[in-house]
Length: 301
Ligand code: NAP
Image (spheres, rainbow, N blue to C red):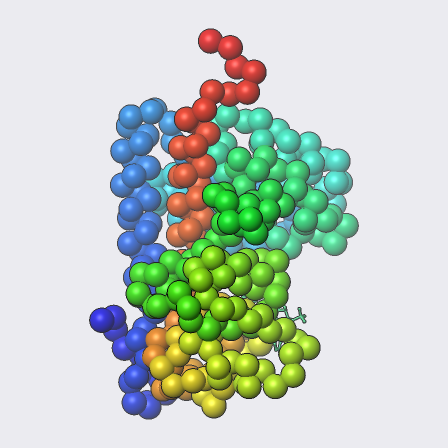
């Protein structure tokens, strides 16, 4: 049984879905496997991040990814482009990264400046290096239930649920949010895990009437305090993907008092957030292993 979460001085009921601890474990596994694989092959997995402009949060995220790659025994490269970069220039850089045999994973840091289409940029990347799992081909594989790269945040949610033995097959799951980044892919992953899935969004009337029926609630709305204890069936599992800045603190989409009703609960921070980067590192290692296992296209001898 995992640690239990104490919310706001109330009785400690919910099992803590401790993403920080699990992510540490996954990062250690990636490091051990990457180092052993590198010794065998002489290749070090490399993640290339493309950062266009200087959005302050993106600058920090990319710096953290560089740090986390280094700690996990992976290489990283950051392509920093000015905010006024044209579409043609960005597409040419993405094409070059796709051809670069030393690069195994490509990540286009979002948001891009408004004149650049993020979806089109991701679609330009080599799908074999789509470690963010956002390429249309990866999304198609997910929809069809075929193997492929899975997006890191929903994948992190699934790992948290599996690691804590949260029963999924035959259970009712409610996902709050329908974005391409989180809500839709996590809905498909829960469906693949044999949940009966309901997806809610901003037009869903009486959200509580839906969430109260759920065995598992995944929150990905970006609305602090959206889920209150009265909206949760006692004993249900609540995974909070939301990250919201309120004053100087980061909070999720759930009122922390939900931990007094839920059976298991992921905190913010320390829940899904750390899992996202751990999944990115694992996807990068897997991309490198898959790319190095096949001869380069057109490469002779
Ligand atoms: P998004 O693109 O803004 O999507 C938000 C979704 O929530 C939309 O589908 C929206 O409905 C729905 N929504 C908004 N208000 C709602 C309400 N009152 N009731 C029900 N549904 C509502 O956001 P996102 O990219 O999916 O991210 C969601 C949250 O997760 C954000 O807080 C983000 O910061 C966080 N996040 C965390 C991680 C991580 O690593 N932990 C990674 C990615 C995102 P409509 O479609 O009708 O507008």
